Length: 158
Image (cartoon, rainbow, N blue to C red; front, side):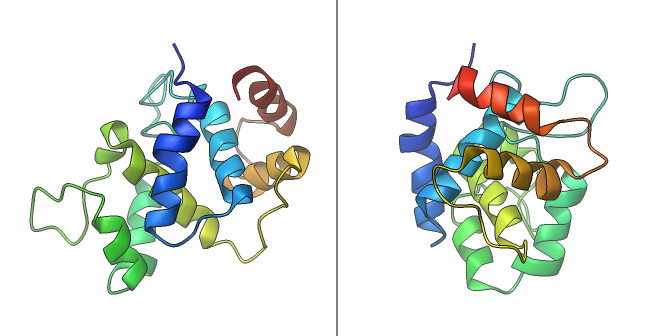
């Protein structure tokens, strides 16, 4: 059973993006679309099969560690994201498995992923452009997902 998309927007995505200072309606829509596509809006918390992806945004630990190691450590944005996390150790950053159960933290990490992209976010309301952006910068051209699949999941789940 999927997470109610209104709850996901109002209680997870928007507050997470606001907490790290990266909120926009376009970002809110893109993150909701990413969750709809990647986990069927929270139906899956870990990648099906043997894949490593975690949480409702299905971020891979390798990508997560890259964000922390090469972008977030020592930055105010890293402090803001880290404030949403349970550290539980003296590691340089929270464990990626936290994205499975800490929805706001997972949303912040997804938003940070898109923030690192040099191309601007597509406009709010332009779901086809957001689908293409997701494919290019989140799923990647070599990924199994398609723009059409994203659009179908958006219509069905959002």
